[in-house]
Image (tube, rainbow, N blue to C red; front, side, top):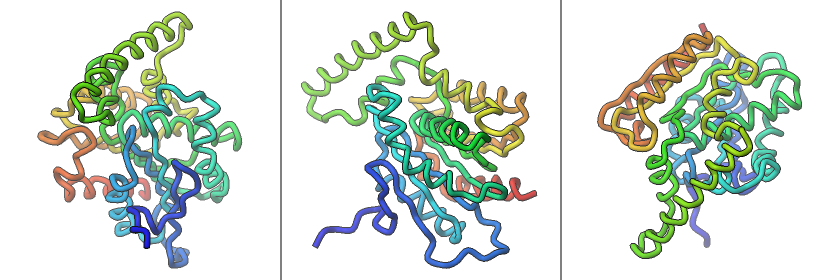
Length: 276
């Protein structure tokens, strides 16, 4: 008998997309989100994201939960067409939402989750002709900027532990990142992370006035807290309703593990504000 996986009660729609349908019928008076979007950080595994899914199932038992994973290859190598194919099942779920009254809570992690959130929002707008109805957004350890050493640390997490193989891998990664940056300069286009930062604060992509919670740490060695606070300032200027959870002592995408009570209390307050 095969062992159950962390998302065994979810339906796997493709290699990157998982959907949870609540067992009970949604009450007409429910104020739970219609859909919770969990967008994982780069190379996050189902067992990592299952902890957040379980908490949401407890907080909002009538909500559907849609999980989308993102790999390092999705961000760095795979084409736009390949990324559209990755998120296509998720987009089909979004297209099926009630056009007039849907309420989405988007919870994204790091730059990988923000990249996938941007894809989903743009895909929905292109198909439906309107902005994805995200009422509340949690930005966990996001968004950062392209900083060379932080990017090396992020991409090297999935490398082999063997010292020789890891050394070779980091060297090749450094060469690749230089080539990637040169390509952006020659093509006169912004790098991917800068594009994500801009679109997160673009009312044509994410509706202005929607509520947000930024959760970040001064001890994060992959996403600088100053970069997050710069984005917070820009979001406020654009009209987004912003809440801030600034942690001290927690690492990258580890704030929930560091202080789960504070973390989920902030999420609950965020969703409460969307209902005001």
